[in-house]
Amino acid sequence: MQKQIDAFIDSHQEEMLEDLKALVRINSVRGEEKPGKPYGDGPAEVLAAVQKMIAGYGFTAKNYDNYVVTGDFSDQEKQLDILAHLDVVPVTEDWTVTQPFDPVIIDGKIYGRGTADDKGPAIAALYAMRAIKECGVALSKNVRLILGSDEECGSSDLEYYYSIEQEAPMSFTPDADFPVINIEKGRLAKSFTADFARERAEKGGRVLAFHGGDKVNVVPANAWACVAGVSMEEVQTAIARDTSGVKFTAETDEAGIRILAKGAAGHASTPEVGKNAICALLVLLRQLPLGDDAQNNALKAVSELFPYGDFCGRALGIEMEDTISGKITVNLGVLDFDSASLKGTFDSRVPICGDDSNVTAVVAAGMQEKGLTLEEGAMTPPHHVPAESEFVQTLLASYEKYSGMKGEPRAIGGGTYVHDLERGVAFGCMSDDVDNHMHGDDEFMLVDVLVMSAKIFADAICKLCR
Image 1 (cartoon, rainbow, N blue to C red):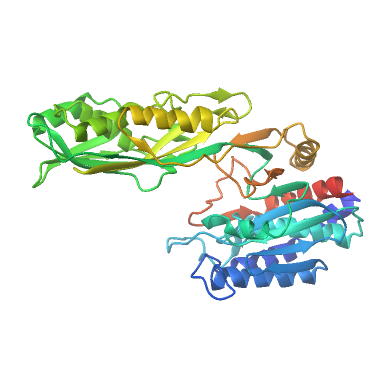
Image 2: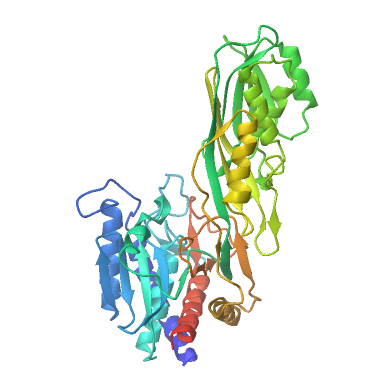
């Protein structure tokens, strides 16, 4: 029977690509809320289009108030949910192969916004279900395709859907990488502050202002500080002694000397790949003859808690690691300072062994000791579906069958569309060896991978729901 399903998918490849093109042509970037359209016109339009598509292939389609559209294989007991999303990130005018919403196929790649994230994988899942149905395969339990429209802006679509429906015994999203992502680290992303009197030390230099970073989940590539009461020679000497690899320049302005730091960006879940300009500049400032006052000491405290090159929270007292989810990571992403206040924001990805007692509470206490105040609230806990479960092992077997590669479950520092589902994993459709330009210009999906993914999904559905 599986050979028949595979043959169906191969023979309907052109139809699958045309259906994908139809969805890609719809600009489904989140827009302004309108009556009956919580995410604006584009997301509502793409949901309407896919609802018609689902119904046309013989599935029971339902629209949940333009948050989510679902397609049910049957009215049997629910066993498996497949979650994908049809909203996309904004585009630029810098595409070179085609325009973002004008899909084309060139050299085995289909280009267009959403081809990889996540309209292509959604169509692959739909065609897996279509192949099973049209080949006459009977399933004893139901599989439901859930297509949302707000993944890129916080997944409030799923929050709405799951306020109405219950989680299935098994769920996967093809909005990540093969083979299977069964562990997603927890996240502690919080701000900290310091307030101080305006009195400054009579002797020594002072930092007038500091700014670095724009997003907490990005290693900051740029930072600057304005200092007074120190000489350009002292600044240049500190720059010459720096060994961080961050590039520093200094220039005079009306207030004093402005020091600029140019590092390298990276994702907060892998801070070691970047060069944190904030942390490097804080180290540089400590080499200057600054006065002993509350403002300068607050910056010194931040530098002591987030020293350059400390990616694992050693200085914060939260360094930890376990065998299946790896090490904790820490990234100081944003810092703003003036003569009256300081505010910073950091992002920590926490392995399974971490919780609020050994991470959040420890960070709060360490900051309080140095005169900083951590924002209140609990961390987002880690997510884990055991690798030895029948669900994960079945998915791995289907992946190995069609890819010809050994499948091992993976842990990641980021979050997926199923992070909040107790029994959810990520399963396809991309791989580490192909840069699909996801969220970037000239986004594409390999046609062969799309077809293979449909076969993998069909195989897994049959095994899990027959």
